[in-house]
Image (cartoon, rainbow, N blue to C red; front, top):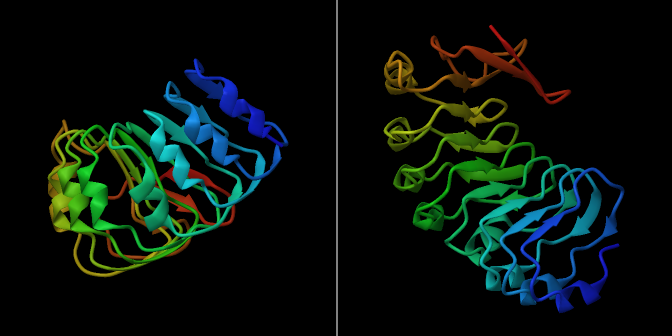
Length: 215
């Protein structure tokens, strides 16, 4: 496990622990490091909830992908600093709905919420995150329509929404796709299935193994 004594490292800027077999939970003491900007713990065996105390650090990038974290995604997002540029929590066991406060992160570039157990609708406030370049929401239980505000994001080049229960039209997204400066990777369907009609999607993704391919 990550020792609680790590909170004593008050000059720590980067913490990179990817691709190990680290177990147990993230110590709340990490939130006491007032210099911490980059926290990467991808692909471990970490469990428990993501500490809300991390919001006390000036984090710019967090990558919790491919672990066993549980808890409410709303509590996670609401606790994180608005300085965040990269938010990765894909491939965990997070539940709940995405809060509308997601639109208050003015520096976000990359968001991965995919491969969890989230539900509810996708908030239109994503459209306020105008710096966003990649948005991964695939393999959850989202319902309703995909907000057209997302189609207006000026820098968005990757969008994954496959493996949900979305309905409605994606015509506006197809218009963006036809813009050479718009979407480069658009996946709304699972390979072998048809989640939602998407005539302009150029990628499908497998829900058995995390793998996407050109269609």
